[in-house]
Amino acid sequence: MQTELSRKLGVEHAVFGFTPFPAVAAAISRAGGFGVLGAVRYTAPDDLKRDLDWLDAHAGGRPYGLDVVMPAKKVEGVTEADVEGMIPDGHRQFVRDTLARYGVPELAEGEASGWRITGWMEQVARTQLDVAFDHPIKLLANALGSPPADVVARAHDRGVLVAALAGSARHARKHQEAGIDVVVAQGYEAGGHTGEIATMVLTPEVVEAVDPLPVLAAGGIGSGQQVAAALTLGAQGVWLGSIWLTTTEADLHSPALTRKLLAAGSGDTVRSRALTGKPARQLRTEWTDAWEDPAGPGTLPMPLQGLLVAEAVSRIQKYEVEPLLGTPVGQIVGRMSSERSVQAVFDDLTRGFEKAVDRINRIAGRSGK
Image (cartoon, rainbow, N blue to C red; front, side, top):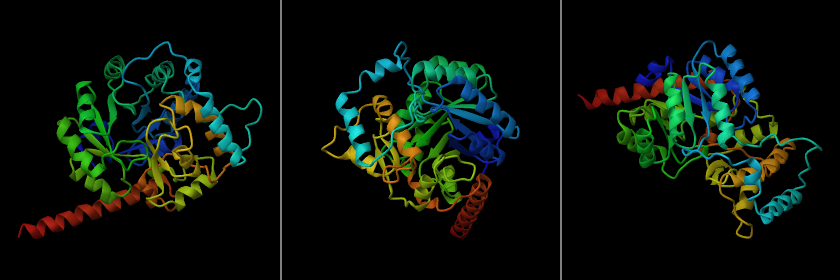
C-alpha cells in the first residue's frame, strides 16, 4: 500500500493513523504506517514532552506526526477565564439537572476534570508546537483548517510537512493557497468534527481541486478494500482514526465504553454539537439526545460548549454512566466488533487490499479481451 507520499515520508503503507494514545501511535508506525498523535488533550507542555519522548523511544525509529487544533487566525490575549465568563447560567443549570437526573456522582474534592480540552486556545497550541518542534516529527496536521501562516513557515523551516483537514473542495483550495502540503479529505462518515459530504463524493472532488497536492481520504474507511477504493479515487493514502479505539494498545480507561463500541452498529452514531459546539460524529447516547431536545437550551458555539461540558464528560466517563457514556467515533464503528492489536488491524488491511487489487485486475483483464 505504497504511494508517492508514503515513499516520501519513508513508510511502508500509506495508512495515516490518528490517535490520542501514544502507544497506539507508536504501534502504527512500527507496523509500517504513519502514527499521528492528537495533541488537543494536552494542557501542560511537560505532559506532551513526556509522551513525545516516549514515542521517540518506542516507535522503532519510524516516522510519526502530531495533530493540533489551531484557528487559522491568531487569537491572542483571550484567557480561559474570559471564555468561561461567556457561558450562560441557564446552560450550566441544564448540565447540572441532566447529571442529577442520571445520578452522576460529583468528582472528589480538588479533583480536576480529566477531559478539559484547551488545546484550541492560542497560547496552549503554541506551547504544544514549541515542544513538538524539539522532536523529530515529520508531519504537523491541523484539525481546524490551515494553521496560521507563521506556523506553516515554522514547520517548513524544519522540513516538516503540514496537513489540514477539509470537508469540501472549497476548503481544500484554501489550504492549497495557504501553502499546505497535504489535504485530508474528511467525509461525512468520519468520527469527530466532520462536514456533510460523503467520502466517496468528497475524495475525487478534493483530488481534482488541489492537484498536484497529495490528498488523504478519511471517513468510513476500516478495511483494505476501502483503502483500495480511496486510492482508486485518487487519494495518496488514508487517514484512519476510529478503528484504533478498540485496539489492545488503546487506553480508554473504560471497559463499559469499549463494550459499547464493540456492540455498536454503523447506524449508532450521530453528528452532534454536544461535545464541542461544532458538529462532531460520536456515539449516540442519552447525553447527545438531551442536547437535541427542543425543550433544552441548545448547544453553545465552540469553544464555549467544550468548556461547559468538560467536567460533566469527565464525571460520566469516570463513573461509567452507560446511558450517557460516549466518544467521538465514525460510522466504521460497525466493523469494530472485537479487540485486536494494531498489528492485527494492519494485517487485515493488507489482506483486504490485496484481495481488492486482485479483483480489479481480474475485472480489467476480462474487459480487455
